[in-house]
Image (cartoon, rainbow, N blue to C red; front, side):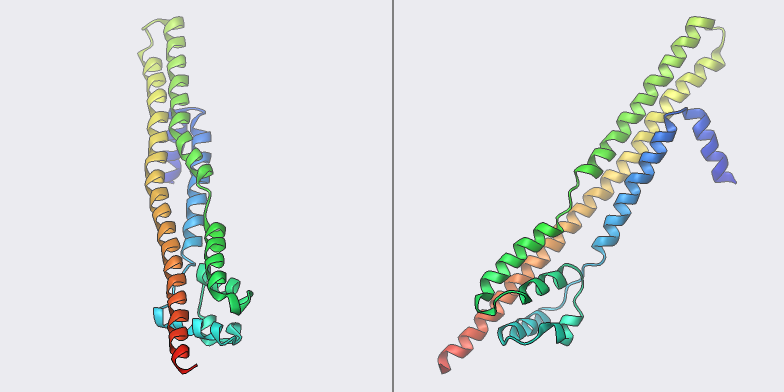
Length: 211
């Protein structure tokens, strides 16, 4: 009940602009939470496990049946499945191609979420202008004899700007954290591809002396 009373008071104080600000806030945080949930699905295995999978690829074993392959999740699983569909005789080229294609698939377009975040303070500013217009209308009709109505208009003007900033500032912080998290995942996938190539080179060096 207390939360509902606070919301009703905020709507009454902020005016009609509070409604689109509220909807905008829900959309922004829904998109951010969805992306966080998606990023949480991406796990990475140990270097030794990557090398073992690389050996399975070189020996042309069915990696889908490999117990190590079954433990993979997220972007690393997509990466290894992509490689497994290519010719093992061109494994190095397949690894590079797979890494580039999977990273391109993984990249998230932040333009929409950033546009929504940036629009929150602007929408709050619109509420400010709206409140000031109401204040000037009151002054025009009643002069300064109605201080309560004047204060109400000024309060409405200020509250929407405040709400717009309260929506935007935390959302910007979280969106930047998500961007750095995505960069870390891309780095880990590139690291996986390098370890895989190194394991191929090591096997080639072992095979060559005895050949």
